[in-house]
Image (cartoon, rainbow, N blue to C red; front, side, top):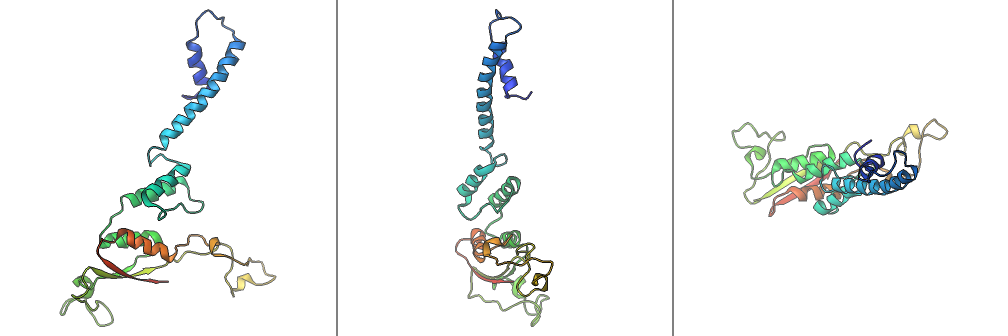
Length: 220
């Protein structure tokens, strides 16, 4: 017996019944169990509703509503993603570091699994300096400029793990006719783990400081 189930509520109701009934009351018990069933259903709804009031306990479509409230369409549940995994993404993005170089690197790394290359033309650690250890023609450093304030150049990388499981690529021998393999006409919505370029741009825009320009190049 658990708190709020039919048996629990039946016992609570019967404990309040006047004592003039005999010990064996099958008709009365049947009536009370009907009431208890309805009350246990209501109790279950109350418990479920209480869970949805906190991100750490919310479930099902309520998590999707929470994500929409905070992030609009920029943070959607992935196909087949569990509540626990989606909840973790929501919490991470709620408390994500923003308006910093490290925040930009981290959001792209979390999104694509690959760290971006970031170059700030007014940052000596990026450009190097004459006589310093961080510069070498074709090896390290880069051309800095005081004419590019509040700007950065970012090379973001697409994920390397996207694809369609168990389906051979065009021209791959494992998809040969009459061979023990699988090949089929595919569409973009069959790709698993895909991150579109627009997702990368949106991620950068969500963490970059206001009033700055981040020139972005996306590469494989």
